Length: 129
Image (tube, rainbow, N blue to C red):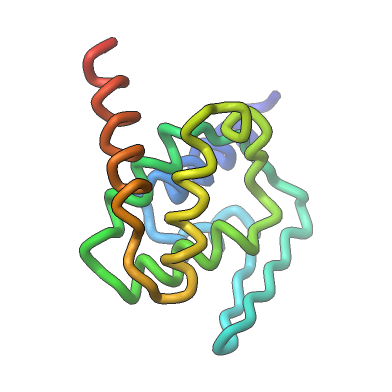
């Protein structure tokens, strides 16, 4: 993998984690158009990155206090074509996190179980580090 591809994948993970705004995806050629309840993504370079449950948990927690940004971020995470969730889907807490993402994408509060799972995942990471 070349340096440019690695940097693009890291940017995607930063967007998933809520460390960078989703609008930064434009810099790697991913165009996002939001039209009310619809989202169109053009990824001509087919840039993709793997993300894990820690990335998703971090993103939920990073956006939880801004309902508008949370909804847009969650909507984009569901509609995306640039994140490979395969590893994350194997985690036992995946369903709780994805339920939280789903609720947020509709503008609903993140369910308590999803927030609990997100906090546990982040805490687990910090206790290992």
